[in-house]
Image (tube, rainbow, N blue to C red; front, top):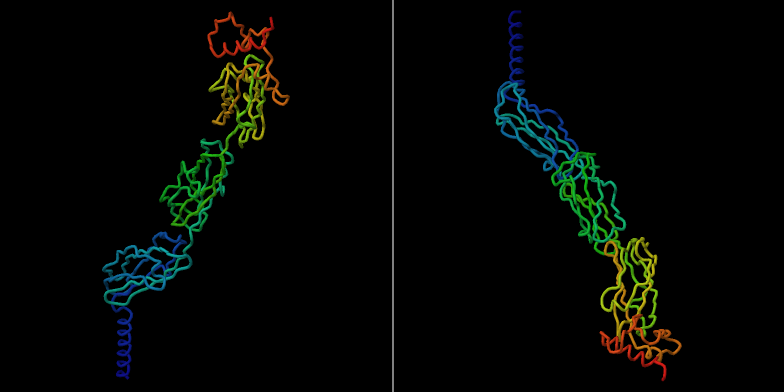
Amino acid sequence: MHKIWAIALLAVALVLLFASSAVADGPELSLSPSPASFEKTTVGEESATVTVEVENVGDSGGSVEGSALEGVDAADFKLNGSDCGWVEAGQRCNVWVRFAPGSTGTRVASLAVRLKEGPEATVALSGTAVAPQLSFGPTGLDFGIQRLNQSNSQGLQVTNSGEAGVRIGWVGTEGKDSNNFWISSNDCWNGRWLSPGESCWLQVTFNPWSMESYEALATVFADNVGFSATLTGTGGEALLAPESNPVEFGSVAIGGEGQLQTIVLRNEGNLGGTFFIAVIAGGAVGSFQLIDENCTGEEIAPGATCVAQVRFDPVGLGSKVARLAMFGDGGGGAMVFLRGEGVPAAVAAESHDGFSPAPAKAARKGRFVRGKALRAPGRCQQAKVCDSARVFRARVAPAR
């Protein structure tokens, strides 16, 4: 009976001995959290670091030989350091991992931590990669009609409308008229980080050079992807133009009443303009007189007209040329060429055929040139005027 009990106790001791050696025979690692999940991350960026805790749950210390990423999407994750070396039983160390996706979608891999002597431990890794997304408010800028060579600025708000943070890259304008639009100020600087829903702003300036339509794009890159807002505008000016140019006055006798012409000018531009002065300038200014006009002092709308009355009253013989000049705001003036010919009164009378303008009325008593009496024969100061006057007196003097 005692022999049986002795055998039973020996068997129990052997079982306990083998069980004890199987449960705690050297170092053993345990990893947490398991699985390790990462926040949504924009393609081209890196997630925040996830810390994987390594615990030695064995009965003796061991040396961690290294860590490795494994699996089909291992390239989308990145080891970011470790403080694991010799780990005593019950002690902990850390391995740091980041998610750095190269394309969109769900990515999975595993982290393996190896002991120099003993089994390795693994933990599953998973993350979702998304594309960058920016939106503009407003979606585009229309500057309307802008006066030539004058600048106007408007603002654009740029918002990260995606599911993950983005990093701003290049900011500027592009397109066929990008020289007329530019980013004059912004806080969307290169390298700025925008979390989902966060915004920055741009100030866009437009300056047209000619009276035409312009278009370009305001572009912001985020993680190597460009996003654009349309930019449009039209160059504008007031363009006052005569219905005919030059204005011909024909042949007009010296010393007569002259020839009056009404000159019609139209604003052929796309902006209203105000003209502040109208003058006869250049060349034979003494032979042309601006009698009246309604082009200055009030704005002339696009398509509207105004008139100027100019008299040609030549002070001498021959071809006479001058200009009617209108000066306005923004450089939108007009230049009308005036041409006529001064002839002796008799020539003008002989050339009248019923279709040409009537000859000028002779000066009274044949003694006046442009309203000024000749003081005495032979005292003329201007040879051409005196010659004209002598011919005139000879033509109109009564027979004796």
